Image 1 (tube, rainbow, N blue to C red):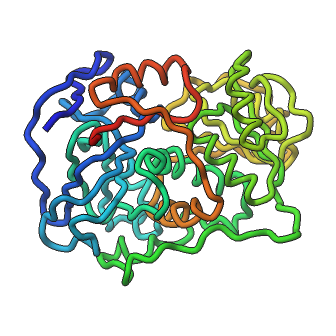
Image 2: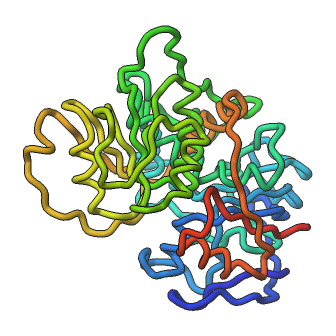
Length: 369
């Protein structure tokens, strides 16, 4: 099969013919239609994340069709089923984290396109427990960004905007996955609660960095009656226009004061200097969520901007519960994704364009045309 392969970090991917993977028991072989290009892929290729397997096929927003079953329990999947393969590719299922539904924190967790070969290829083998049935009505290209930009964005949004008793992040096990069995019919979890006429407790949301994840989160926030304030790189007028088109009530430079005090903020850009900026923007009791897997060093800041029960929290990966909830919610909004297709052999160009910020939305590698 054709694949874009990383032999060494900080070097371009190489288009190669490599053996097609054979699915092991509990795995499925997916014929890849397309795969989103994520900033995490940049962190892998650029060497910010330091423990990839080599050689490696990157890509972790994989959309395709089950082509072969590996035997054993494949959790209700069948040949021909349309599925998505996300970043979280496996966990032990036995540790205290997994038992609490915090499989994203498992010491034995493994990640697609990092420790496991990913979707910049014609086929990808994946643990059936960690594959998601995709919602109807989404073409493959538009579905790809839901699998990381959507899922990480959604987890960040829950942490930022919802009361602790509403969010449930890490509050319950991911159904019976960690117990070794699957709920009948692989039903989706209930989506986030609606607030009706009640003012949401965290009403004004700031998004620092308006890329793939923010363009999805802003739609969910607006659907739930929240105000979105978009902070972009200084002078990035295109991203600011894009944010306003998606319903942001204000868009400006990252270090400009917002016109109103924020209740919460999510930092998607991997820039540590945005943490003090976000703390200054949120009210007392406000929350700052750092959503990236990698961030530059956070500069020192005065305690006064944290005082007042403001809080900072990081997001680590995702859980299957996040996926089940968000993929049920996305069609209700409905989330519309903005994508920029690149053929497989131009994956390096897609990474370069992402690195340089040459588009709004998300690049998607088209494998099966």
